Every structure is written in structure tokens, then in C-alpha cells.
Image (cartoon, rainbow, N blue to C red; front, side, top):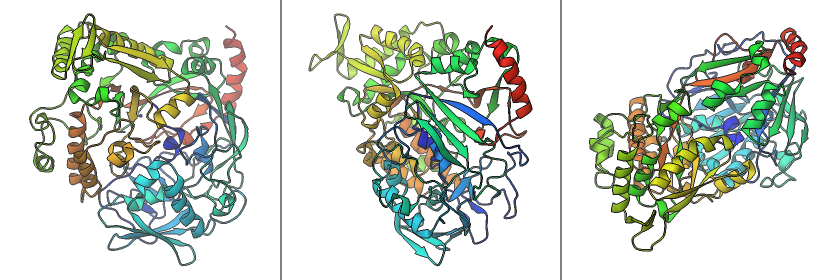
Length: 610
């Protein structure tokens, strides 16, 4: 899941579309029907409810940060900032698309499904001791939709009215009952203090610690370099079932590093405690160190059942160079995944071909049944191959010989109006040479991109690879100031409203949206709206496959690869529950074994000097 801003990781609003179930005195909502956990459940199955509290967990972050307000488009939010805010509900990480009450005590979906009532717990408090009120919820919703990140406008677009009801209730009214995920999406909303923000400009960046309500407070920061959070000793929700066994560290600390290479060396030196690895080369060879050989560092691959989403070389369709789908299809022949997997990735990956790989949502074979019926009405507006041929990116034998692929690419480029002049590919009408820039924010990706650029050069195309710092990269991506970049679109088991922000025409013109590619398609817009209104799980699957197939044959991305596991390295003072959640890593359920920490610290000084 490229790189997503930190707030999307902390508060990402993934949701679904099957039957929504909610009523008074239920612990939450499930978009698939029944909830796994009963109303009297004590804790999630993937936690250790007796996990000891205490100690410090140290993490790394790359680049810098300049704001503690993660809800607006301006600035780069500090890592971990989501931990200071509570939301109406908490997602269960071992159920697909189920949520349980946190700030909300009860959730009642109206019989006609045209509204949902969230009832606030009496004990819900902000860090200054003031109660959370319905007025805070109403203000938060209206402010996020009007002034927050563009995604909030996409997610909340079908809400027509928000109003206080009774002493502690807030009712959200909807345009129609078709958007079945919307009642649950509302529960993912953080609750902010209306009183605190009343005298402040919500749209601006700030390094003043905002008033929160979550398990941690900001203790200190060194602007752009580090931030420290301290567990709230009298946290109002500490004993709720949704929080038992979580938030075990007393202190969470993030240090920022210039790039991933420096961060890896810092980890091996014991400067921080846990690291998620996304480089197959580093996973295979980069951790070799005295600490690893002494058993002080542990490496684990923890399986998950998450859809892979899509990572790839993404075209900016706002650039005239990439308007022609034949051009986009042609350039894909220059990426030799099989050679890269053998020579660069140690055979670790599978090629991604679907926007929903590793799940039943992926479009495979040719469309049939309901999926075919969905697509039929667009016949003539979408490529004929959608109906006749399963999409597959170009394949090679791993030898590095891609001559046949380059010939196929050059044929497509010739059809699109490009021919060789000397050693350069030029446009037949304008004489413009085929040149563009590939934007990166991680130097480690250069080893993957440079062979791709070399293959493009063999086609007469000049692709300049440019690596910039994280802040500049995020700003350029927010303003769509790039030609090609490594992009990533995470997916849930039940996609819905977020697809508007990914591929919707309206989002293409909104700076800061996640329609990084600039897709504007009436067909895709209609497919998204039908997906949002899908009446059942089978229908959801069919609509998602239809959307997937049209995206595949739009050639908007040159797909990369994926792995169905988390690669985690950590110093052997951390412990985790015996059961891992299916759909997340669950680092907030880990804890520090203080006796092991003492042993590690005693040995660390010896081994890191070797």
C-alpha cells in the first residue's frame, strides 16, 4: 500500500457494502451481517488481555513533519499522531468490515436505513477532562467535510443532515438507503473538541499539541526530527473491551531519518525497536549484523489475509504524453518483472495483475453472470478485450531478453503516432521527443526503476529518474506535479465510497485527493456508484470485478508485485499475542518484556561494537 500519508494509516476509512446490521444495545455494526463478538465480549481474540504495561517502544519515520493537524491538506503530519484521537467506533482486525463502539455506546440503524443514531458514552472525555458531547460530533463532521482532506467530502457526500438527538445522541441522515457502507463509515470519524478549535484556524498547520482524547498524549517533540507520545494514565476508555490488551507501552517515540538506508543502519545499532521491511533485498541480506547473529534481533514473516491493493508505476493522465492508452500499454513492456524478481527480489514476490489481488474480488478469466450483465451496457465505451481476454501484464522468462516485448511495444507506439528519428522516439506531428520524469522519494527504489528506464531507452524513450526528499515528494503528489511515480492504492475486503476518491472524475481535480492518476471516465464513475449501491455481498463482488476489469484495461498503472505477509524485524524485548489478527499487524497489541529488555540492553553494547 508507494506511500500513503500517515493519517491514512491511522484513520483510513475502509468500508463495505453488504447487509448492515445495527440496533440498540449491540456492540457495533457489521456490513456482512452478524458480528463475531457478542454484546458482553471482554476483549478481542487477537490481544493478550493480561499484557504488562510499561516501557518505551521506539519507531522510525522517514523525512520530516511540520504539523500536528493530520486532518487537512496542508503540511506533513507527525508519525503516530492518530493515537491521540478517539473515534466513534473501532474496527475489529479479525473480522471483515466490522466495528465496535468506542466513543459510541450504541449504534441504531433506522429500519428504512435512511439514518443512523450514534449515542455517546457518558464517560467519554477529552484529555482536559471535559466531556465529549453531541455538539462536538456535529462540529467535527461539518468541519471535516468543509475544511478537511478531500477524502472526507468523498466519504460523507451522501449525508444530508447531522443533528443532536436527545441528551447524548447524534443522528446522521442520508440521501438514500443505497449507500449501505455509509452508516459504518461515520463510526470511523474522530471526535474533536469544538471548544478547543473555536479560537483556532482548523485549516492551518500547527506544532501546538491539539487537544485529544485517545490513549496517548504528545509529551515532547523536536520539530521535524522526533516526537514522543506518553500513555494517558487516566485514559477514560482504557478498560473498554475494544481496548483491553492494547496500548501497552508507556511511551511511544519516533525518530526521523533521511532515508530508509540510514534508518536500517540505525535499527541494527539499536536506535529503535521494530521495523516493517518492504525491501526484499534488505530482508534477505541487509539485517546481517552481530545483533542478529547473537539472537538480539528477530525476523518474522507474519501472514495476513489482506487484499494486496495495487502498487505500480502510475501515469499522470493530466500529461498529454500519456493520454493515449496505446502509449500506456506499450510502456508496460519495458518492466521486466521476472528478471527483477530473480535478480533483485530473491524470488520473494508474485506479480500483481489486479487492483484487488489476493482476494475473491479480483477479476479473472472473462466476465460471466452478473459481472457480464454489469459490463454489457458499457459495450462500445470500453475495450472489446474486457469481454474476451483476461488481463495479464507482459511476461518474460527472467533472462533479461525482452526483444519480443519491445517489438510489441514499438508497434503500439507507431499506431499511436510515434516513430524513431535517429535513436530517439519522436511524435509524428510535433517532432516532440518522448521524454518524461519518474519521481521517487526513496533511493532504494532506484535499483528497480533504473533497469526499467534502461529498457525504455532501448525503445528510444528518455525517462529521467529523480529522487526528492519526503516533504517535496508529498507536496508534488498532492498537487499532481509529476509525470510518473510509484503509486499505491490499498483496498479493503469490501470496497465502496473510497473508490470515488481513488478513481472518480470529481476527485481528479481536487488537490490532495487520492486520484493521483487523474482518471476521468464516465464509465468508471458509473461503475463506482453502482458498487456503492450493491445490495448484497455477491453483487458487491460482481461490481468490484467489473470495476477492476475496466481499470486493468485502462492501462493506468504498470503493476508491480505483492507479498501476502508482513515482514517484521524487532529487538528481542518485544512480545506479541499468540494469535495475530487476519487483517492487520496489530503492533498496538505488542508489549515490552522488561526482563528481556534488561538482558538485551546488557548485551547490546557488546555486540554493536563488534
